[in-house]
Image (cartoon, rainbow, N blue to C red; front, side):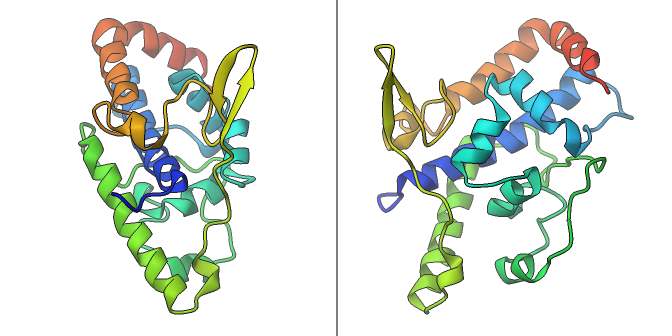
Length: 203
């Protein structure tokens, strides 16, 4: 991963968040008839489970909608997993309506974090090959914005505040493993509490 740019670490983190969020919701709600939630409610659950503002995440990735965001990591959601980069570009109609369920592409709730890194590396290599072949449309449309200092605290604008990013943080021990473990700890300590919170957000 020596050639990873900050944008690649952002994408690895995004993969981890999308996968873990829906599976955490499933476990907390513990209802076979509620396997996920509508796309229109994604911002609510994103805030609930990550503590981060979804609007800020969209802005960091230069996206306006959840669908645009998922197109950056098409291997993570059912509505994009079967589509390659060229198919995604050709498809102009909406792939995710407001009341469509946000479903993960992988059923394994305990996927290793290194899998998200490897998927990001595979995508990076493919993107690099296409750029080298002259496909300018393969370039990412967002950039990591560096660090800001606010009130004596350093915040990273490439991702939401409070989430460690960058190559250094992924080495403790691997990308955003702490956040992934936090989800697991919350579910084992207080699954009922989270389920109540998730149910209260039912719309």
